[in-house]
Image: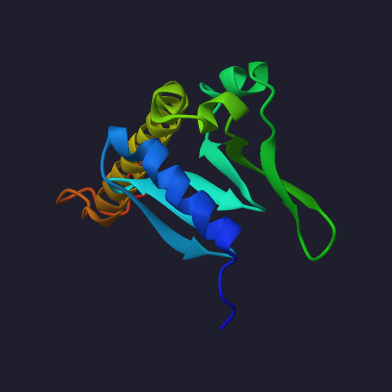
Length: 150
């Protein structure tokens, strides 16, 4: 097992400190970096010695205006993948107060994603219930636009 660099663990501790005013912050190792959660919501990641905050299409313009860059990586086949995480503005890394508006954007992005996922899951469940529902008595085998006995 390779030990984390002290710079990476220092950044992780600093990021947790910056985000803590918004709720219980914790980190989990992932892909050579760390994922950062506020409560149960994945709001940030640390990769390549940088903090990237979640930014959906609603939040992205603010990050772009601040000069942030999206997190991206190259796949094995050479394609470039861009994720919905943007580098934290430099000033935001100075204090929890400076980080707060950016962390709120990240948390709101995570909450919107969770709500969309719940809605999609509910729609999928409804669709499977509709498909599993038996046909009413006396109408088996007749579909819309079909005549019985045709």
